[in-house]
Length: 405
Image (cartoon, rainbow, N blue to C red; front, side, top):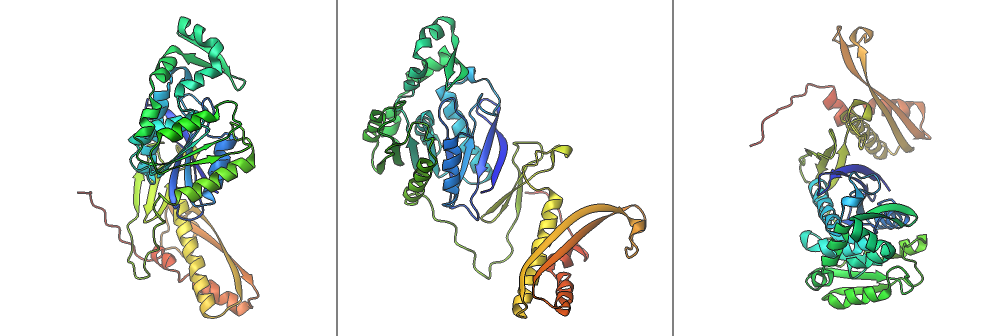
């Protein structure tokens, strides 16, 4: 399961740390995951549920809310409403760089947040809550002994899950003003409520209130013996299995494979603006991220331009050899192409026309596994130079550049 880590700008301007877990192949849908109060994107529950969902073809974006985990900002200045705004911004970022989230998943207070944010994320078709409170103010029970101090002093430090956090009076005012069940009544999206009957942090009655307030289509799944934090790996896998099956009724099917006679398609490269050099690359249904190493100003969140050039040559070489070997019924089991780009002095290249300065050199090492004789191996090495990308790189190239209209 590949995971891309990057940052995007939150609702208040801070850089928020995110992780996008991708399945092998084209995702059937994208999901946005909101973690529990004072938690982070890398909790066991978030990571395990995301990992299990990718096995079902669903890509999952997890991120740290402002002031939590690796994200910028001060947690003391956040509120439930600001978390909802960050969630909407995360959906915007996913829409701009990949594909809009069709599924919103929220754990604990994150579940309340996705219910509150759903109306502002029009592309979302399916909403999932896991151990969510029916009223965001429920979270104040976690620090009830400090409420008077928070009101008196404007803020106070509280202990949550053994870690210190500063809670402000503005947070209390904000959660007190929320009317979450009114939003649930007007959700107009498919809803799946998942809750454990033995949850001691957020009681099962919260699930009942959410379920009753919602209009159909709605579903409820009991998580039986699960605890509030979904700390057991088996519970996370079960949750993902149910979500993947249930959401399949409401999200679009994977894009059909192109016809064999389809012509060349455009490659669209666009700045993500989440870092100085990061680029989003779209090739039909396929999406890539390009970047540069940290040493040259990037974040190393994806292959660099020359890496992609080498990948194109390597892939073309391997494909060409495979097609030839199969056509000639050669006993070729596997092809491995290793490539490297470097700059060399022109004077060190006896066969090069250029004799002054530096020239680009692409080194290609081809490994051929199989019961091939010497003549077959020699012929395959000759065929390698006939791959279309190799021919393009060694022939005259004309690049036409114009300004977009």
